[in-house]
Structures are given as C-alpha cells and as structure tokens.
Image (cartoon, rainbow, N blue to C red):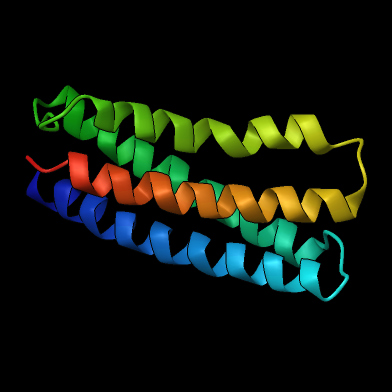
Length: 123
C-alpha cells in the first residue's frame, strides 16, 4: 500500500500543476480572442483522466484502511471528478468562446480543490 500512497501523493502534485497550466493556457487564449480548440479540449480530457486515476488510487487506499485525517478530503476528490463532466454537459451546445472561459476557470477551480485535498488528506 505504501507504493499506492506514494503515487496518490505525487499524482496530486502532478494534477495541480497540470490544471494550473491548462487553466492559464485557456485564459491566455481567451484574452487573445480565441475559442475552445481541440488542443485545449484534449488537454482537459487528459486532465480528467489524471483526476480519475487519482480518485481510483484514493479509493484503493480508502478500501484498504488508509483513511484521510479529515473526511472532507473525499468531498474534494468527488467534486474534482465530477466538475468537468458537469461543465461539459452544460456547455456542449453553447459558444466555443464561452466554453473556453468556463473550462479555464474550472481548471483553476480544480487547482484549488487539489490544494485543499492535499491539506486535508494527510494520514
């Protein structure tokens, strides 16, 4: 279980940095007048995969008795997994420029969730 805990810990940092870069990239493109492109959408899809892997590792740890100090940690994890699909369902028939702004802000929101998750997850 130590290896799973190590990967869960390191993946949290990876996820934080990845979504920070994706959110900043999206805001930069929005300021330049751009709209949602396949590159940014692909990056967000890759990020969603990271979040799901992070959640899967967390569930393995939870099931084998390695619980976080504060159970609100689970709320941050579940929110991080659900927020991008929720925004996608809301934005799929709307303007791509609007989508770029909202997805960029959601990426930065996930950064905040990752930070809060890291502060509440210590065992």
